[in-house]
Length: 469
Ligand code: BES
Ligand code: ZN
Ligand code: ZN
Image 1: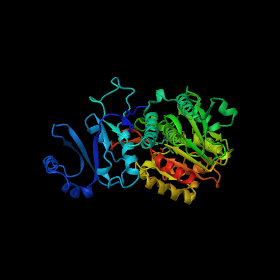
Image 2: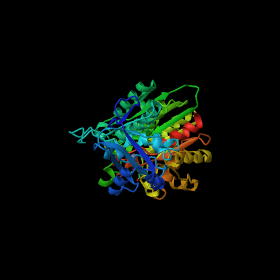
Image 3: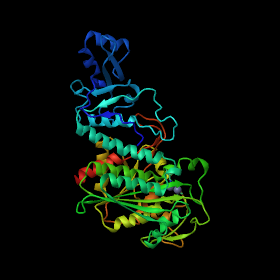
């Protein structure tokens, strides 16, 4: 894991510098109740309640930190404070931060966002500790709080690490290793169907997409939890590199395609969260892992594939490969009628055109699921946005010679037509949610460096918590 561990348990013996959290709107009344010395210091530093200010002791050491926040509506509440404070131990002063901590999640979110801001992806840097001084450490007020925060930080850092790892070091067999490691840590069971076994066990589209790579395609399966508990199945697109196949991507579109296993990374991060917080479900994770490569035996535009479900699909474009590997995995997921199937995929360029790169789109035919998922997302400040499974657009996938095309020849509504293709493989009654995610930060934001990122997993975890806990 690449995040530097910068949280400490409450029994940490070192003296900690208190941090006072103050909401902007209460700053002026708070200011009035401070000592003359503190008032003078704050004023002479031009501090007006935004960002942070260090207050000194008589001897020049730091007595406390004042940290102003706009409201308690931001999940990334600690911002990049951990990157700005001097090295040392800090602790939130609960008694002087009462208003800011009045909502139950603020304290937890401060810890999580503090940890996330310290994330760095350094394994390929010769100098593994690029900071001159050690990062500051936040001492938590209770062990429960720290355990909960760490479960989120580790899950999100896992997603970031997997997405950031270059394709040369993260091929299907490497995802298998990651899954085995996770299974070992949480006493889960993992299984891998590899190469030509995909044909004998009837996963023809996963094989067709992945067969051109020197790294054999595979379907990875992880199960965990009580057999009798409600069944939650997660499916993640694991395209370790998407060259586009014979419909080769142009240079700029290919540049970031190491992230095309972002869906797999998301479901592993979410699985980690579910297992570490012991959600009472029977979890199943399915990851079709392939490389969409170019070779003499690559699948071609115009080929017709027969899917696991029996639906025949004419290949309009070999670059619409994600839906092909997902459709066989979804058929298998649906076969045991779980209580819910949730898939994550970096499926279309069209989704980011519709919603931008920072808002994940989701599709589901069940209104209650959609409403509750949106509500859960808002309640944990992890917004997700429903897009429509607009049935009339299914016509765009009409093939002259097969049951369906894999992609619509016009790019319009591309995220919708991709979702409609997937919908063919899930029965109507099954609660199914499909997330189209970017898995990447294009710009630096507080707590979020440029690079791999988890989108919508806290919203989904909260939804599952509300429904099954
Ligand atoms: N992995 C891409 C989608 C993608 C591209 C996600 C850029 C995020 C950023 C996917 O396999 C793909 O190439 N989709 C095509 C589909 C088209 C050929 C119908 C796309 O969206 O352009
Ligand atoms: Zn593609
Ligand atoms: Zn792809």
